[in-house]
Image (cartoon, rainbow, N blue to C red; front, side):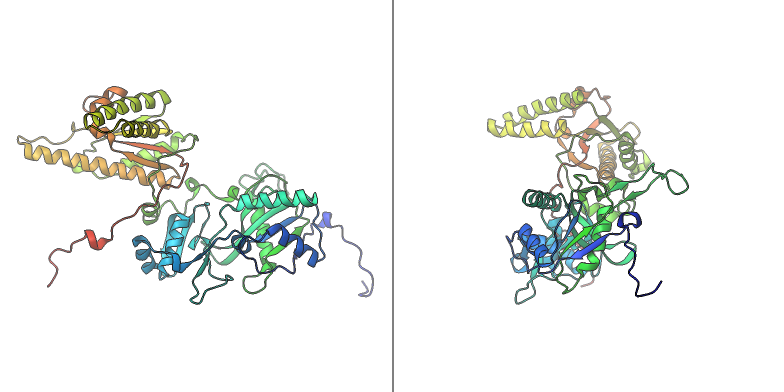
Length: 472
């Protein structure tokens, strides 16, 4: 072909051409700025106009700034937990405190690295909290948190664009994430609206007519990553990109579709330290049923606990049916009411306590009454040793309960312990028909968590540890 000849026009639809444009004229965003107004101004400055099917990709930082997700580290008081972790990861304790507040679980850490499960579900470094490209104070102490609800922000922006222009676009908020098994960061979608963020190709045929078995495409992540090439990571100042010609399914999807369930995460659930530190007491559950296989997995882990003489004194009564849970909850509630009344407590306080107890039991998809039995334990002619033997059975049963809690957390379930059966073992036994030699010790509720639970606080080791025999 002569280089001076006019090229033949390309049919974009046939060859699969997509166009990405980084918009010009985007100002430094401040709290309470209107992102839709900024987008329209940037489109005009770039001589661009939105079309149906376009994807507007927005950098997380400008969304967070507009939403006022800015925190001065000087205003943060680090907890004891944050101070301890900060020493291990070589980070500012105030920053670590913010990370813990924004997270549900510490997944991995070592010096200079802190990986957490953000409350939005993303597994990421430092809960996405950043100090770069943020206007700093005199001491470099301004941190920027992730948007409160990126999916909701995308839906709101998409609706505003539709209302003002009549154009049906998709919106993505992207952020830079590291990856566990590869160096470097890539752009990923942390918010999405107007497209199917995760496309399931299972059942589709490949070039040789073979049916795909496991292929799922994170289309929102692929678009976010391509847009990141234009946005840059330093001082480029191009935080808004418009993509055109993307072949995708239109859908009211969300970036939450891209978050892998913890029960399917093979790379987190086997880390003891992360499991222990990430566990929370969960008292509210969704209505989603717990699969039998998952329950069996939790109970199998429970019986891996050590026990004196390997006598395995634990026994488990599993309550799934609503009627049985309600019968137990009401019986225990009446016993609690009686005891509190005898204590002379105020009737309003008693009613509140009883109502809360009943709700915790009946609101859980599964309740497990954990018991111990002395039938296989040793017997002695004196009370001193018999008491010690029972205490060993109690210890073994308690360790089985701890295993249950850790296994549930690792499987993506929430769990909590109620010790109330200790105050009314006969009531529990009668209510659910337990054998007379099963001694109720606790009730463990299980289900899919409706909230993240409250972070626990622990006293520093210096308050509770004594080194015995230390040299003067």
